[in-house]
Image (tube, rainbow, N blue to C red; front, top):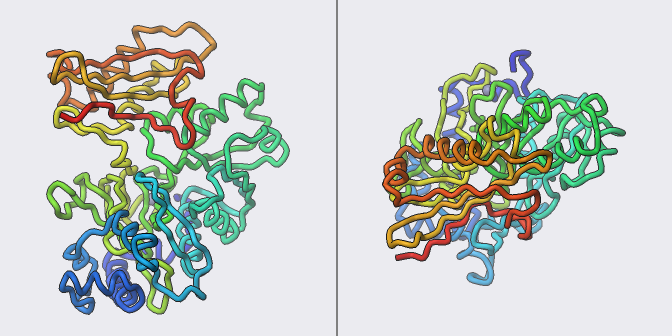
Length: 454
Ligand SMILES: [Zn+2]
């Protein structure tokens, strides 16, 4: 931030060489702690013929195997009698959390009070980098459940001295905004868009409320949908990427990538196809390693953990905000990626085509897409459905053309397939409330691949 506010100034602005030295010291301590406290890592080092004492620097982590969510599930009940990732005594565990992930089987996750304080510190840094201070009151729409996010954000608010309104959902009465005059809301892009539409429909004017920033998290989004959200609320929207596993990266007011709190979590980028780590600027999966300060205790450590989210390291140089911690591109979920004719496409590619400014006079932004087999063998059909606003007639052709044009612009590898007819793109305009996803429970699935494998 240009006014020079930081939650932990000294550590957030460390010169790169000092930061790397601090990271390496923490890598050594964390690896020794893992080998000494967790049955899983004790066996893992032995099975892979690794002497934990030889892991001296963060580059050495790249020599270790990658651990997946499946690895965690295979080392917890009912597969094993005990939680083998647990890395402290039960007496030291403050909370037990769970992460659901894509397969549905929850992974047990254990946090000591020290872990909570570190999670809160990450969120606190992120909030302060977004201009939050004691004068702010924040509505937390993220759910207060087995996920760690909302709870540790609340602790972060306490550390900053700001007020919290712990609603845990976005479907709240607008009196909350009018009477308590919160200054910010944390929620997902689509929930915040819906909330904005509801306020507008109720006749709530911007002067009736005091929101001056939004924090979007919980899912990846296109820059176009963020810009549209910002225009609807007339305030900046900052991205926060958090997980129970302990990421928690946040965009600062410069909006130049998400800062990774490098002293507490080390992040590498891995290419599963190459089976190797890649260079800055290249796209791959974010692989994280928990970093503990010497003497620190943790309930559950992750070394080289595959987040199954793809990202790119934007820079390790100093940001205009003054922070030196590396910045990454808005991560996308690998589970929301599909392959068409050897081209990868993510749900976010469709989102960015839907949220083109010309479309948004007609559309709510809600969309869903299905990939299916065509009538002829080898043909692929991409069906994109978008929800129209009920305010006026939808202008069908321009919306269709804009979505297809911008989707192909994002995916130039598919242009030839589209023109020779082997890829059909069908855009359907739906009336309000008619998308399939509104009939589903839980997190909406906006991209489904329905093709029958050959
Ligand atoms: Zn910055």
